[in-house]
Amino acid sequence: MSNTVYNEGYSGNKNSFFRKGINDTIFTQKRKFIDLGFCSGANLLGHNTNIQKKILKKYIKNNISNFSSPNIYAEELAKIIIKTLPNFSKVIFCNSGSEANIKALRICRAITKKTKVVNVVGSWHGSVDQFLFKTSKKLKVTELSNGLTPDLKKNIIFIPYNDIKSSRKILDKNRKKIACLFIEPIQGCLPNKNSKNYLKFLELYCKKYNIFLVFDEMITGVRTNLRSAQDFFKIKTDISTFGKAFGNGMPIGFITISSKIKNLIKKKRLHIYFGGTFSGNSLTSFFAKEYLIYLIKNKKKIFNYLNKISSYFEKEINNYCQKNFIPARVYRFFSMIRLIYTSKKINNRSARDFLESLKYKEIKNFRNYILDKNIYYPNNGIIFFSYSSSLKNINYIIKTFKSGLKKFFI
Picture 1 (tube, rainbow, N blue to C red):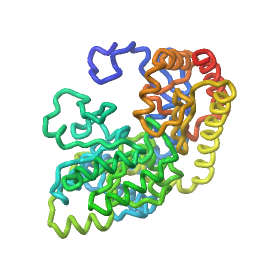
Picture 2 (picture 1 turned 180 degrees about the vertical axis):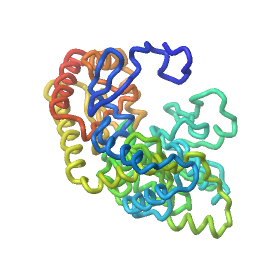
Picture 3 (picture 1 turned 45 degrees about the horizontal axis):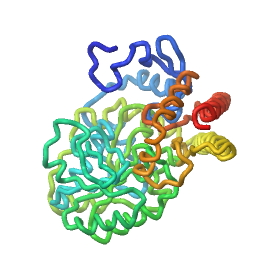
């Protein structure tokens, strides 16, 4: 147990803390694990790969220092980002995804002069006060943390994911007070690829009633074949937030805004503070720039492989579950994957949570079984593969998952 670190997760045995990682394997002091987390999906290439080492060596060789002042690397990175995400015209760098969402919310409120923000159940926008809330089955709002002020609770409204009828009813009731609507278009709690109709509904509704639609694409940015979920679904937003895989594990977050937003800020003569000591710092910017250049040059082989192994895992587990009448299914969006412990068709987190709560003991035993077999299964349940995930280890993961499902769910 850590005597000094008070963050979540540090109350366990020190020997379980991770020390290093190589390709698709991570190490504690006494054990090694095949990784299924890859830095919460940020690490697209894997751990300590040759290209990562080459970029860091280049950084040192060129005597680049880490500036908290304007630097050419942030400018160069922004140009590559805009080429990758062509719907936008400006980039605002932040230190993290959480910070990006806070500043995106600040932009929306500054322009609209409204305070209400809509969040979609199942979306996660970071450990920041404005979003640290959850809902009951009846959408009653409760705090996820102590220390939140009452006005924050009053200003957040929840709508259910993938439920157009209920969402429309709530939006109609509150639309005159709403500044913006935040959503993870594809959610880690249920990476359901069949969400296009719901997302198109939100796009059209927000456009009709002048509500800013904000896509939080921390996970789907880059992992969606080096583009974004909104590009995949042919949806346009004026503001979006990104991070994670754009830095392959380096701490990064940023906001993208359209020409419309840029012009509104200018027209209204708004002063919106975007500062942050290490926003767009040269170390992260240089690394992310070189990394994105590498991804662009090797796009086909990298993303073909990621989609191949992700699809292989999905088909193998789903076919096994169906053949053996096991109440579990894999949901997948590109290389974001989740095993859901029910065979019933579900559309959102509320339905998932209800059905999985009936199998709490079996799920806990299954996850411990996977861990005992030296596979790191992240606590949040979201599975990611990387370009370093070997086919040999994928086959071992599939074999282990099948034996665990048979042991605890038949």
